[in-house]
Image 1 (cartoon, rainbow, N blue to C red):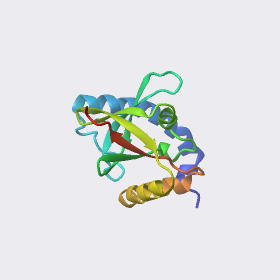
Image 2: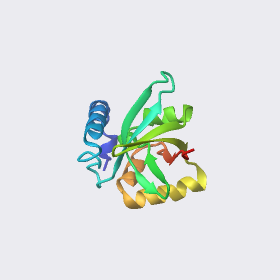
Image 3: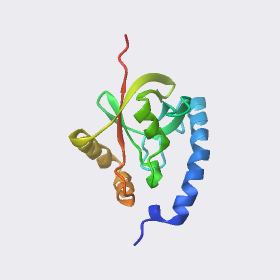
Image 4: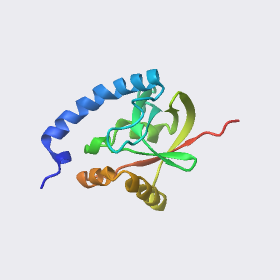
Length: 156
């Protein structure tokens, strides 16, 4: 059976929905301090707001992203809703790894690192064991889903 994530209908409808609901989610999250919209419908995954610097525009770009706490850091997956390409925020992180993370009403400067090798494998097991839909997403695409560790910058 063909995966719904590979269907033409899914791939044609999801990008416009993400473009519309992403900014709306950001506005609601900020207005409500993360209440009511602080979790994804899929599995109740908590949400943070990730602000990156655009690789070309150098303008701030904010997206709601599901995350998994991992010690003193947060893990986020560049699944892009199981679409064939990485989300734009991954390219932004590659160009500018200094980011901002908003949790509830707090905003922190952070560093984003795209994980590779054994560190990625360990982190992937952590994420996939909590939210199994990421395994389904991974099997639906031909790319390795980027896994990013967000770590708050030390306060000086």
